[in-house]
Length: 111
Image 1 (tube, one colour):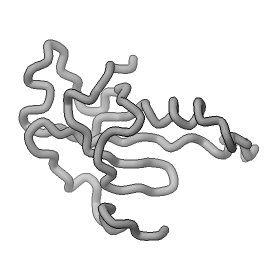
Image 2 (spheres, helix red, strand yellow):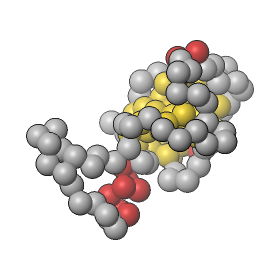
Image 3 (cartoon, helix red, strand yellow):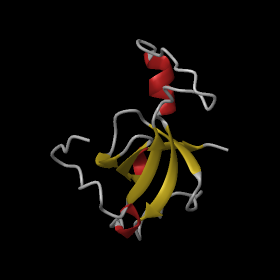
């Protein structure tokens, strides 16, 4: 994988990242390009599919003050809905993107 500015080295242990203040570390699953049976999907220009897939994330870690002003506080491993183009990309691999997102940028919990 090509290293880009702003990304951590691939061997960095993502579990050692501890968000500060109201930041939240999320794991976003990339859009599938192949089914579990091995069929390759041609999602080429299907932006609706890829954009929707990138909006659902799993909460991996939270800063001390994350969601402190909200009535409903998500828990670790909760699934949430975020805006498409927000957050700071921390690391990326074949299946997931890890992003740091501010708590006020979450749209909803996804049950």
